[in-house]
Structures are given as structure tokens and as C-alpha cells.
Image (cartoon, rainbow, N blue to C red; front, side, top):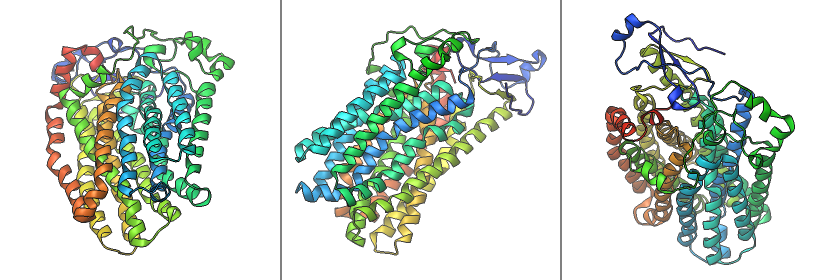
Length: 524
């Protein structure tokens, strides 16, 4: 197994899976233990790999789940390019059409609290299939409806179906990737989500321009059906409560057809592994999402990440009307103008992922920790908050500068190149800051990654729904320049919360772990 060389220290950290009781730190030199950082514990290391999947299988599994997650952002962003067309065809105001975005995001906030807990306890595959089937039905309804009331109702159903795909994709990555490699694989896991944001408005603009707004819902219907088939045939179950690190056999109905054909199930069963799995009650309990959200450190992180997302939605929702009014663009041209925003998010995923892994390894090196691939460490006392937020905080302040500058440039009819360039950097910095904070939330809840992602989704969608509803009225009253300034000021005023988490977060996290299950709380 590959070993990554770090500076020599007193401990070797096994970056491994299995249950948290089998994870830990191995003392190499007893006589040096007393001089080592007192926060690094002395524990027996596990010999079990974090996952039995090969590198190729791991990447393929993450990419499949990532393209499942494509459905959620593309369902939201593809809709932006038809706002003006819907307003004219249904004979309602733009503000009323924006309420369909608000309704969509409210249900995107609520439903993952159920589907996330369900997937943690019963498996990722059945949860994904439920999402795709509900989404398929909702999109068929949206394609044939011709009423504002039905538009609102079916958008709620569409949000319910697509919302779980992102949190399940996040959970699949947490199932098969150790914390020290999280940044590298996050680039793969966020690929579908980022492409959905980047390409959705363009796809919507093209389809709306040539075939009308109903065609976008037929596109989403087709995509939902194809992804459901891909899950049935190719996506293995990864939930650690169901299959452990992949060696435990899932129920026959929960196996993908490719695993049955290739008999990978038998190979995994005989792979050297601790097959212990969760024995908790497998009925989904949405209250678990609320419990996570009420933890001191997590609540602050959820609140701040939701503020960032609200600013992201503000730009998305205001752009179509601004481009039509100031530049006279049609739906296709508006869709093309979303590309810099999407590609800014995409660039951020790769760049920030690299920085995140580098900073994690830098802290390991400082503590004398040697990281071993496919081994999950229990880093009791490790400064997780510093490792993640040292990347997030500079990006938060850069986001403030970018969104303020963009807003004032859009206040006046300048050359189009200016707003487009600023859109790229605004998306890049906001996405990078949000991604870093979100990664820390998942790091703190490795036993329940989908439930933690659902808690994040709950906050960000409620805040995003508010931003979608308020964007046009605020811009009408204050102009976009002052509205963007208010958004940036909110981030600056709230940023000391992240400094507080970086200083006291580790204490809060360990205190919370002792009050529940210390070993589970500190799994990485």
C-alpha cells in the first residue's frame, strides 16, 4: 500500500476505515511520547483498509454519484433561463415567478432531512432511486402543466425529488475516502454539482430558444430516468451502516447488477476487513438532523455557510432580469452569460481542493504525523478547524470584494466583459469559501455524513429561498449596487464567528463527542 512521506515524528497515523474503535495512532518511540504534542493520543492502529474498492472503482463510484447530484443544481439553474418566458406565457410578474424558486428551495431544504437519515441507515442506492423516481414524475407534470398554481405545486415536488442527490453524493464520498484525501476526491464528487450550475442556464437557454420552455422539463425527465437506470446497473452500495468498508454483503435487492454479474460481492466478503456495521434503528428520524444543527460548532458553521449560499443565489436570481433590461438579451444569450459563473465555481472546486489537502498535510507534518493512504486516522486533538478555516476565511473576504465590485459594475450599463469577468471571480471565491466550510461540517460528522449534509442543506436552502424572494424587490428599491454591498457587509460582520470556531471549535467538538459517543464523534 502506498505511503506518503511526511516529516519524521513520533506517531504514524493510520488513515483508515472500519469502526472508530479500531482507529487510532501508533506510538513509534515511547521515550519521545512525553515530548510530543499532548493533543496527539497514543492508540492502537487498525490494519483494516478504509474501503475495499480499488482506486479505479472508487473514482467511478464517486463520479456516478456526482452525476446523480447533477440533477439538483441543473433543475435549479436550467430554470433561470426561462424566467422571462414563463412570466410572459403564464401572464404573471417576474416577482411571482421568483416565488416558484422560493417554493422549490423550501422543499429542497426540508426533504433531505428525511432522505439523508434514511440513506445513512438503509443505504445510498435506494435513497437515490427514490429521488430519481420522484423527480421523473414531477418533471413530466411540469412539462404538460399550463397554470401558475400547478407550476408552484410541481416545483415543490421537483425540489423534493432532486434535493437528496447532492447530500447522497457527499455521503458516498465520505463512505470511501479518508479525511486526509478529502480535497482530492471532492473535486470528483463536486463535478456534477458544479457542471449543473455552469451548464444549466446554457442548456435551458438553448432548449427554450429553439423548442420552448417545456422542453427543459422533458430534458430533466430523460436525465432522471437514465440516472435511475445507471444506479440500478452500476452503482455499488457504500453506506458504512450497510456494507462496512465494502466487504459486507448488502441485501440482494440492494446490489447493483454489475456486482452480481462480476461476483465482486464474493471477493469483498473474503477481503480482510472488520465487517462490523451500525446496529442502530434503521427507521429515518428527521430529528437527528435537528440534533446535529443544534451543536454549538455545527450551528455556527451551518449559519455562515447559509449566508454564503444566500449571496450566491442573489447573483443567480438577479442576473436574468439585469441582462434583459440593460442589454436586451434573449434566453439563449442570458444562458451563455451564466457560463463564467459556472466555470468560476468549477475552477474553485479544483483549486481549493488542492489547497485543502496541502493544508491538512501541513498540519500533520507539524505534529509529526505520517499519513498512510486508505487508512482513516482518529485525530483526537487535531486542529481540524484550523486546517479547513485557514483556507475559508481569506476566500470569504475576497468574496466580499468581488460581489461588491460586481454589483456596482452591474448598476451601470458598462461593457459586458466587466460583469462577466467579475461573475467568474465572484463564483470562484464564494464557492471556495462555501466548500471549505461545508467540508469541515462533514469532517465533524463522519458517522452520519448524509445527515450532516442534510442539516447544511436545510440552512442553505431556507436562506437561499429568502434570497430568491427578496432579490428583485430589493434591487428595485435599492438598486443592485447597494443590495450587493449589504450582502458583503453581512458576511464581514458575521466572519468573527468563523474566527471563534477556529479558536474554540476543537474544544466544543471534543466536548460534544464526550457527551455522546466519543469514539464515533472523532472518526475521520
